[in-house]
Image (cartoon, rainbow, N blue to C red; front, side, top):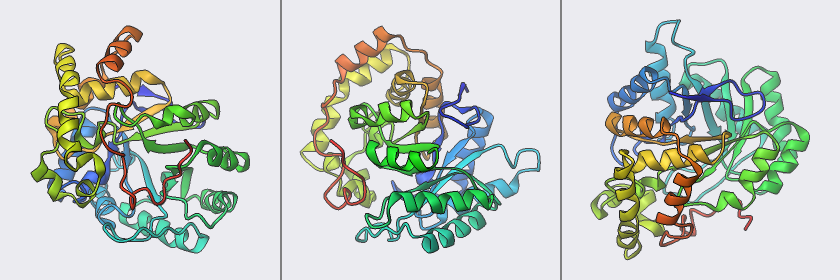
Length: 333
């Protein structure tokens, strides 16, 4: 696996990471055995960045990672660069409530450390802004965690370029996480540029469009298995059928490149800039290996033009979030 240094004060890490939301039942049934297989395959191929959160399965994802780490010998226990998050207070499916106060984040961070079986988390994100606590105050809380040795770097998920700039004036922000793929390109309207300017890593979640940019996009039956997808506009009819139809040309192009569709989507992201780290989630080692092959593919500017002509910006039918899913992410365009 190729490595890259995506930002200031970062170590060299694998060019792609693993999004561990899939270690819970967020996108469909899974179990500890599947999570362990993904983590073991990641190690075999040199993928050393794992991204999780306290709310993924209400602690299940972190616990499974912690169990896997505890099964490793001392030599390998620190193989992974681990990121986790706090700040979302509600259970999946309930109305979103967020909390960025020091007392809440302190308690949640301590629980995350316990589940992961670690004294330190490499990267700790504020999962969502609460809309009440000033971001400068949140940064001071994160700096306290850093001084206590509980975290090495901190970041924010789904914030705007101006919020990033405010936070960065207090202390350098290690990473910003946001949805970015060939189906969701709004970060190109300011966030990618601001993270590049500030030497902040850009971590791209849902890099294969929550399954749309794959050889087998989610079927209506599979959508029903996931509460998130079932209420997401892009996966409701008639949008779902239109989106599946719209990616057919891209699927064919991927075959021409001798890659899976997801692999070509990953290759495109990595070619966009050196400070981007995609974190695909998967329950399948076969799919993981396909995306690894994509990460190893070098694309030229001519290749990028061909891809973006085949699947141009704005092709997706439906918003990326429903009204309730839009509560929390900061809109800036």
